[in-house]
Image (tube, rainbow, N blue to C red; front, side, top):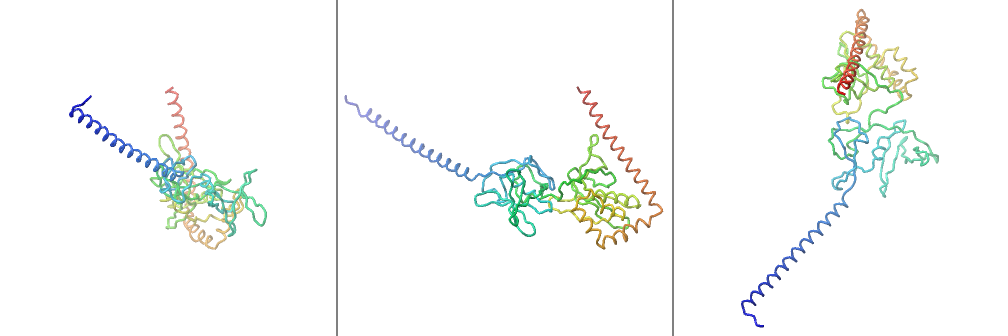
Length: 371
């Protein structure tokens, strides 16, 4: 059947339009497929570049101890991760290990990516291995297995860090102290405190005499402020001290009480995570010195440090020429000052304890009433 030219032209135009649409659709589909393939390739490359690393789950401040519960494993782009970051928690834990003599454990990776621990003793480096049956650590020295007694040193933040900060070994350091058998929590209310002192701050406790002499009694101690009622205690602190430090503090308290115008006070560290502990300069009296050097509760390492400290000629001069001379110059009123200050200290301790008990009783009453 013959078709007129107009119908034929319309049909050809329709077919041409369909063809153009198919071509355009093909181009669009091809473009989308290329984009999809490119996106898939980018995701594959991105996934291959992702590595695991530990980040903080909370804000920490300089000098604060970092514990395992503050760390979370997360995926991070390899290009954003420093070489001293790690995804192995044991590396961080091993970083905090040392032996009884203070020789530190270091960790390095072999060619297969396995973490290997080392320790340097007497300028010789040894690989630290672990007995699979007992879990104890040992080194091989002179062909013999020599077992190590390792202590865990607190890991502290060098600087203030916010949550989600990537942890690297440059941001953490080993703490100054290991919790030994002779460490006890001591309570003091005779120390003049900085206005802005808060729990978690690090302090030196110093003795200042009225003639301007100033001595460090104990150094770099983390402070805890007792919570009494609804506020922090105004004059009471808790600090962890070893046996020898307790005796040093006791002697310094007596000296401060005997001298009119003397002050036992605390000074804060500005960046405790990066600042080393100061060297104590306070010298105890002869009676306390004799007790220190014969006290069975003091550890051998501390005992040797005490002997080295008090066998130097400078220590006797400090005690006799500075501290004793000031005490002797106030001999008439020394005993009176001592008795008054000790009585005041006891009274403040009793009042603070009563306030604490009252706050507990008030909380219990409130709870009972609410129920």
